[in-house]
Length: 329
Image (cartoon, rainbow, N blue to C red; front, side):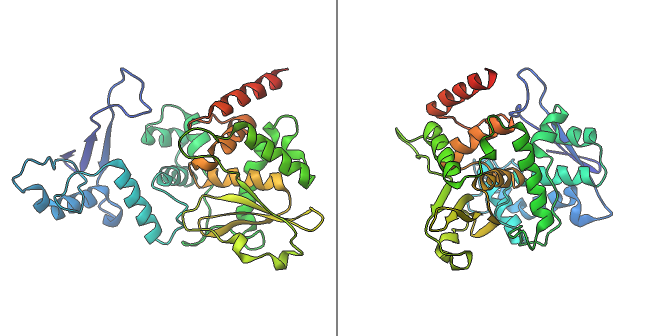
């Protein structure tokens, strides 16, 4: 880090994961913003350096030349996971949902910049992306005007927000093959999902085993009598779908739940609920948890057309090859 006049310059010591081998390391400059010191990066850094000065000058052999130091003695430099945790805690203390992580700030800041008038080229230049498609496919998100501490939970109270989610599901449907998501019969819909999961899930060997991302609750008399225990989730629990069936096996309603709340409430179609589940992970920029990753990952790559980059099971690879051959026939 170097201070040059009214700016602070960071020169990255090595290539980032998005850099091609042989390319030059990147540098990032932050200009002073004297009109609003609470938003000025330079002011913030100078204040932080002043507050941590006594930590850095202790006369031992620990390298404290790094910008960010641990608050715990002996104040070593922190690792990326600590930065991610600090960001998530700050977001939560600001009154926003724990669905958001440190990585969410990358989507939020660039999407907001585009919305207020910055050109796409200016956005990708500042974010150091190499092309427009990276931003448009993975980071350009809808901006929801909701109060801190809330997320969309009901079609009645947040119709416009759910409509934004449904825009993503329409895109999925347009790109779908063999009408997978047009099945409306409840029994067949659940069988389709379970069959897909059986073909791709990781169920053998060491490590975390896959689980179904759809929970089915049978013999519910009416919507008003749904046991509340089936809608309760732990804070931080990954979103999934719960489907309630009546005594004849027809769908009463479906919910997308997780992180201690109902995220999407009372959709009627099982597969639409699954699409909304994928949309939730997209909109909130969440990584798929390992227990659901194989099912959601194959739907992402097969139905949406977005490359799935997390670890794939051997079953996943074999099944996707079959899907690809059938699609080309």
